[in-house]
Length: 524
Ligand code: ADP
Image (cartoon, protein in one colour):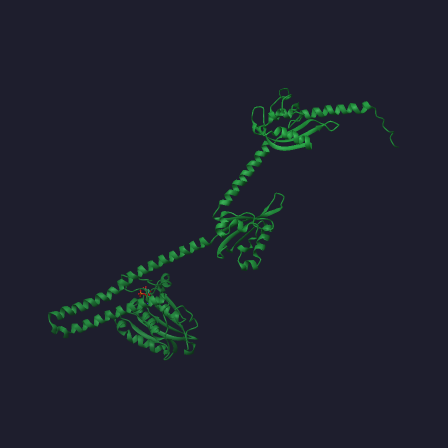
């Protein structure tokens, strides 16, 4: 059933309207957060609410009837800003702005103001409504944020040790700091708006590295890469790169931050430090070498001098003494000292040849057992003096192609050591064939060598005995090992303290057609 049409009397409409107007007026009056007031056409305040009183500090009685320019700063008044606003509001119906206003006590506050023109039903402007909000807190917060952003921007801009720059979401460079300019060599105007692809090496570009890194940063937040990058001048530097995806609080990607550190300087500094250490060590070895060499050379030199001076004394008194048997004995001793001197000098020269990679092999085919026998014969005097006996074990013949003099030298070093460190014992020199190799050994039954020293004794100047007990340069085993290694072989030692030592040279059997051994690319 449709309701009967309503019948209205004029008072039915007017009364509620008047009521509504009253309550609206009350509402406006009681709003505390906004200053809401009206001006007449001349800008005189005609109404005033609680909010206006609270924000501007004037009570309604104090302000009604006064001109609204009271709320403006002297600067604004001097340029006629209050009147200008009313004019614009009259012309356009509305004017909105944010600016400084003055309270009754003279303090300023930041105001957001909307002025609306009030019109009579015939369209004439009869006055203005103003709504003002105090936005000082927001303004200050914005200002503080802006300042801290600015400070941060200046800080980043001034950093010289790191290249720090941003990319927009499309990967184009949008900021560029001093560090970026220093490390990469480009000025900001040369790179802004461009892709950073040119900082990558051509290889990395071809492999799509930049795209991969950006994708990774986008997917997981950060991407790190330590690799070569290219400067403007084409030179490369070793870079530590971190790319961070930048997102708004609601997760939208707005760009990437790239931080690049040039590690080249660090790498170079570390290499320099290592080179410096090596140089220091080399200097120390050289000093040690000089003192050991001088000491060792002095022994035979002094002996030779004594023999020669003795002969001189003898013959100056009586030239006939030249025939004295002490003269021939003196000559023999002087020659022996000179031989020892030349032996030492040869060893020193060998060490210098090894150090400068100048040992060259003079390969020839010869029989190893024969060389062993000859060496034993040559050293017989020394062997006797040491109270030793030397026994050879091995086949009658075992031919190979080696440097005969060098192998002899190695063998003599080992037999001499056995005589020196294992006097009055039986020494065994042996040769055997082991497949494609031969083993040549010198074994004694002397004091042996401590396990701790076994590795060391092949080093330059390394000795397991005190120099006051045994003379020596500490170079014999070093030179021996180098000789064997140049032949592509190895040296081995087995020793039990109190029982003796056995030094073995393992040499590949080289046939003449082979020329240099398989390891002929050895640096020596
Ligand atoms: P040097 O004989 O001039 O000291 P080497 O390089 O020939 O130099 O020998 C290094 C060290 O090895 C010797 O000082 C010694 O301590 C030890 N050594 C070498 N051969 C023997 C051996 N047969 N018995 C015991 N120790 C040895």
